[in-house]
Image (cartoon, rainbow, N blue to C red):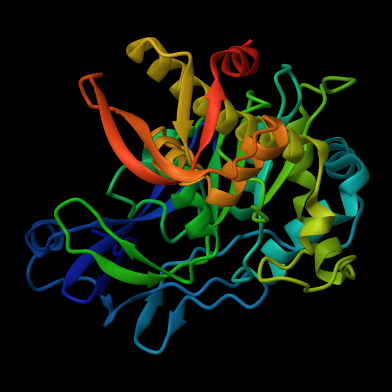
Length: 396
């Protein structure tokens, strides 16, 4: 049997390098756990092939000076095997102009930083549109073509699973059809976007800490509430994508041929932005109507949740008024899976509802229990009196 196969031993585990065929006719190189018993069956115990030996894996991202081996460690980050060359890329340029429009230069900066500075923290890019044929999914697939195995597609459920070994060491985490409307899901993505270390866990294996450098690119058909973005949040870059004017059926293939020229362009292009925050861009540059729309919707959700709670208490108690302080509403909002602070609640009560209070005395706040029972709680403080007519007006 000819020794054409290649084998590696990393730590104490043996791997075989295989080439998995793709529908496109291309292939992907993968490392499959192997066994010495099968190796002896294939070659005979006296004719074993050469086995490259490494002490372990490391993850060091680099696209312009890639190294597969660092000392006695094998790099798990994958090379992107594009042969860089000078040339024109009209289809890629046309497509990126469609996605980023007036922010094209920032969009080029974003992709350039991914390519030349893969460990640089970058904002969470979210493309939204409730219309069809906009190119959102094509943009994700374009990034996948550029960065190959270093980009992976996730689902909403992947973020909720404790097992993350299949995506935690990638450069790009791409999510189509995003819908994470619980605060804990939003917090997880936000925290990961600025994390430098993360614990990776696979089924049947102990958790281990790795250096984390992944960026998130998300798409959603929901323009109002694909994810909860508080008013003060600066880690998101949200763009509304319009429908394409002319559908080019072979666009992906045409762009794939231009990638070597596009990467050459990025390698020699001067960035239009400066390093002004931990996520590179000055947050002011990333403010868009689409971002403000989501922030405004989430802000109104807090107001609606407060009014709904007052309405529920009045209905259960038979009263036409509700007594409470801004701090009383804090737990109500948090139990609803929303994020708010006392200042935000106070502003809603004061500015939106026009309420004032100079009374610092005893009052009764009603808490709705797990089974829907009403629990009166005696308190003392500067409370407000909320009328049923006001609550009904907010909920209309």
